[in-house]
Length: 133
Ligand code: THU
Image (cartoon, rainbow, N blue to C red; front, side, top):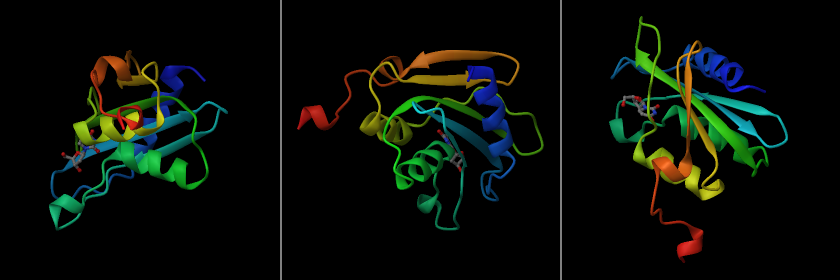
């Protein structure tokens, strides 16, 4: 699967965003090494800290289905009612990605028309992982 196709799945997932508080809608699509794709959206809560980001929704869905090997994640975000665009993953999501993925894991940002590809190593240098323990 190419990264633009993965981003299109992130765009679709973004439509499911439950974000009545921030009105900021995020979608993510996680590509497993076996070719399967798990999608997720942000799910907010009246107790704000209980909110789950789109990336973690996708990762937790995948891990809870037995997946452990991941190749790439596409992420798109933006205000409700507007087209999505560049949305860098938050620090917590970067840390959760680092739990399961190597430094060469690809993080795909941008829009369905134009994507930029980063690595986890670029976005989370000097990380604390299981190798640190
Ligand atoms: N959000 C994500 O889903 N992913 C990120 O990486 C950044 C932030 C969500 C959380 C919250 O629902 C909204 O965007 C505003 O922070």
